Structure formats: C-alpha cells, structure tokens
Length: 242
Ligand SMILES: Nc1nc2c(ncn2[C@@H]2O[C@H](COP(=O)(O)OP(=O)(O)O[C@H]3O[C@H](CO)[C@@H](O)[C@H](O)[C@@H]3O)[C@@H](O)[C@H]2O)c(=O)[nH]1
Ligand SMILES: [Mg+2]
Image (cartoon, rainbow, N blue to C red; front, side):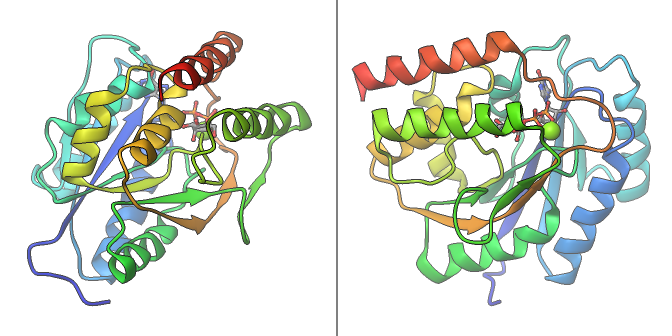
C-alpha cells in the first residue's frame, strides 16, 4: 500500500464492561498498524464501566504511551451513538475507524478497508456481513433474524444501496464523519443505520468490505428490546425526512 506521510488512523473504541477484551484488541490493533507502517491512535470512550475497564485502559496507556492510547471516559452509560460523537472530539487523525471492542470486528480487516479506500478515494468504507464472503458466527437464530430483519426493513424503506446498514465496523474520512455525525439524531444502536442513510443522502461514496462478524467470547451484548423499538422508529422517521 502507498500512504501519504500525513495519513493517520484514529480508532474510536466505545467500551462498556470490556475489561477482558481491551488488552487483546489493543495488541491486535497495534500489530495491524505497525505491520502496515501506519500512524495510529486509539480513543477509548468508556461509560463508567463497573468492571474496571478504565483501570485496564490506564495500564495500556502505560504500555503504549499517551499519544497512542487516549482514555476519554463519560460519567455513565450514555449509549453507543453519543460515544462516537464524544470520541470524535479528540481525534487527531485524518481517517477515523469505528469498531466494537469485543472482537466481533477483527482488526485484520482494517488493511482491506484502507486499501479499498485508497483505490477509489471512498469517503466511507463499511464492513458488510451481508455481501460476498461476509457472515455472522455465533449468534442464535433470534439474533440473526433481528439483524437481517433490521437491515431488510431499512433497505426496503430507505434504499440507501449499502448491504449492511446496522453494522458498525467502518472507516471514514474525518471531515466526512464530522459532517454526517452532525446531521444524525439517534443515540443508541439505530445510529449506524441513520449515519449510512444520511451519508448516502449527502452524496458520499461508500465502499464495502465483506467481514466475518464473530460473537463475543467475554461479557454480554448490550442490545435490548427497547433498542429494537427505537430502531423501527428511527427507520420510519428517516423515511419521512430523507
Ligand atoms: N461507551 C459505550 N460503549 C458501549 C455502549 N453500549 C455498547 N458499547 C460498546 O459498543 C460495542 C458493541 O456493543 P455490543 O453490546 O457488543 O453490541 P452487539 O450486540 O455485539 O452488537 C453489534 O452488532 C450490532 C448490530 O449489527 C451493531 O449495531 C453494534 O454496533 C455491534 O456491532 C462494544 O465495544 C461495547 O462495549 C454504551 O452505552 N457506551
Ligand atoms: Mg458485540
């Protein structure tokens, strides 16, 4: 890959009770970026996790340095969407990667994201579980149906032309993320879908990389029934507006 000397990749990592996952995901991110000779930083947005995630984050700052690992905590569990908004304030790179901290999003795919972005000068590259070799592993049937249903519903209603609307493994040009995030209203899991629909409505180009999404080993998902209702409302709201 050919990189401009000034390119820097900032990873926003939202965490809630990810004490066991954080050291390994950080190690893998460091490995990926170092292998490809890329400038990087990780911004950990932890929402006062009771499991001691922040203690671990501070240890990682000690290991990798305060220029590589930034801990930007919040006082309570304020949701995934606003965690990205918060993290973005501290980004110093010209590209931003958002991903989960629980290995459902493997850092090895980041090299593919970056190569595809460079090849087409895409504004956004998104991982997709629902095209090419992409897939989901470890989810029960109910969770698979919820995810498929959520994607199908938004695809039919809003037709944004992107195969995975609810996934949250994405690479953005920093100014593009600033613009799209400023127009997005959702706070929780609906955020990803709204971001993509808004981005397409603003005319931004989107590339897709098939990813295998593997369910977490440690801890549990924070997706609940009320998030599903919020999502349906979000799709209908956008259907009226966009
Ligand atoms: N700071 C913060 N982080 C949070 C919060 N809720 C979740 N997280 C963090 O956000 C990431 C995803 O949360 P999970 O709870 O593991 O989500 P999931 O059920 O595996 O859902 C995945 O699939 C969804 C559907 O495709 C995605 O929408 C979602 O982003 C994620 O990729 C994890 O790193 C988790 O610690 C929150 O309120 N605040
Ligand atoms: Mg998860």
